Length: 387
Image (cartoon, rainbow, N blue to C red; front, side):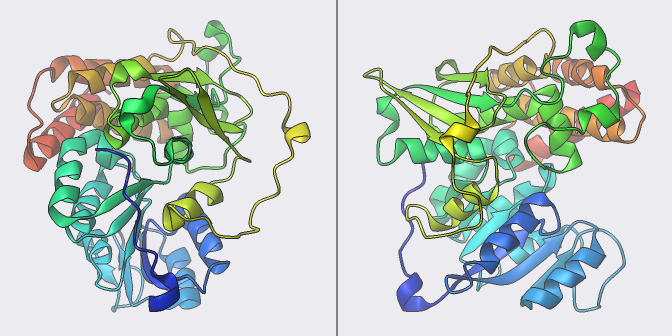
């Protein structure tokens, strides 16, 4: 899958574009609504969905008056709300939604991504698992329906901005930055005693609990490497991860002539969210502080400590293996992190659980949605049974 093509610039002639937000009560969804509150002349909210936070969803629905409201889990909320996992697909295919912001956490976001692309919509993708699990299926859905993906992750948004109109043939290397998470400076002995409260103390970003743990293990960078492979059509050998503690340089692209282009900005998800809506245009917005290079200095870079954070290499190896391996990696990681958040597993158990699932499910096919979901379920079972 190559970088997305420009969308029609029809805001001025056709009025505000309709937006569906999947996962509106999470950190990305809340940030998106802050952005949209400043851009009401360009966009209108037509659909909102949440997993289980009915109270916050009710507040959002009252404030934005969307035509469609969906709650995946739980009995709370008005009878007019749509229920169950089907609510995600319903919102993603709403006829008034030109853009679908998929901020669902985990594998649950896959069907909505596929459905929106098959209807020719722009998917502003924060649900990296869609591409990790089923990158080839996502690409096929986009080709069939004429939809497009614009990434919301700050790293992939940065790469898209660095590339501009250049083709993949011009790329020598993608350099994805990682903050290093809360355990960047912890010695191996100290890391063995890492607790949940420590893992949730991210040094630069405010995110949901699952992705914050993924940042602590560096599993999130493995997901981002696989995602970049599919988004930009770049081989795994051309993608590198470096630690950048300040989270100011979001990614870099090295071109075949040796030039390197980087995208910088304050660590706020509001910036890549806005760009995912407006790409390839830029619009005036004052939602984040002006960039101060003096205050941001110094900017430093470090190598990844792969032995201390093995989830990164496990994920990249799964991406290289292909088939269902990326889906197995993602599912095993999701299940392990869920158990860690419940206090049923230690931080240092997460990577071994992923490794065991990958070994036991090595070589299984991933050539269809059903096969991928079967691999997903099998990986979760292995992790649960291990604990």
